[in-house]
Amino acid sequence: MNRKDDNQSGEVARTVVEFLEVAITMIVSLKGFYPSAAFERRRYMNVVVQRARHPELRDYIHSAASGLLPFIEKGLVERVAVIFFSEDNVPVERFIFKLTINTSCAGLVEESQLEFALRSFLIKLSVSKSLVKPLPQNCRWDVTAYLRSLPEVGSSKEGELWIPTDTKQWQKPPVITPVKSLNSEPLCLQLYLEHPNFSEPQPCHAP
Image (cartoon, rainbow, N blue to C red; front, side, top):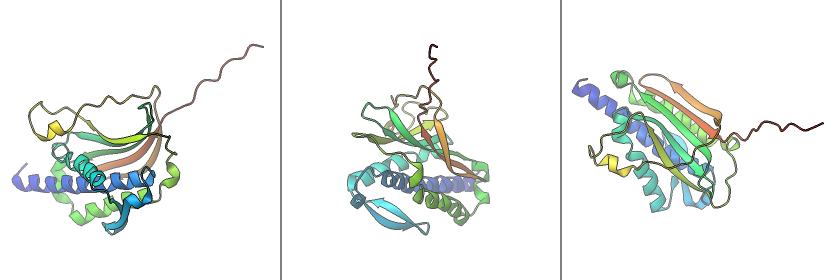
């Protein structure tokens, strides 16, 4: 890969990170985790989106998204999840962004084309209220990245910003609800919801 290709793949990664920051904010707003007054309407990619008013919330989301940049540039990030937890620290809902960037094709797409494709995800998120579940009392949320491989310890300062997760896992495969997908070059992106599967085998009653 030459320097020009490197720059173009970096631009794609930066656009994806910027998109993730906006999308994460929209998800938290959509869930009603904070009062509606905690957000303000802004325009991004010619779509009306939500922006956090509180500096700490805005900084957390910005840090979580921007901290992914070096890993996305290296193709290490497989999924980015916004996870909502119960009081017992068990996930109750996951918004999953599954992504693949083909760096060899980064120069084949105009930035406007990429933004147009990502814009459709933001539009879909803005009308996805019916897909989400009510939040339990005393819940919390965070952002988790799933990597294809772990970066070497001490190889970068960025790696120190992320810590291994001890998130509890569901015992059964989750119920998956597709939201939006993009299968193109250089970016393949899927957005879907995961909910716990509470289906249990029916007990057998004695005659």
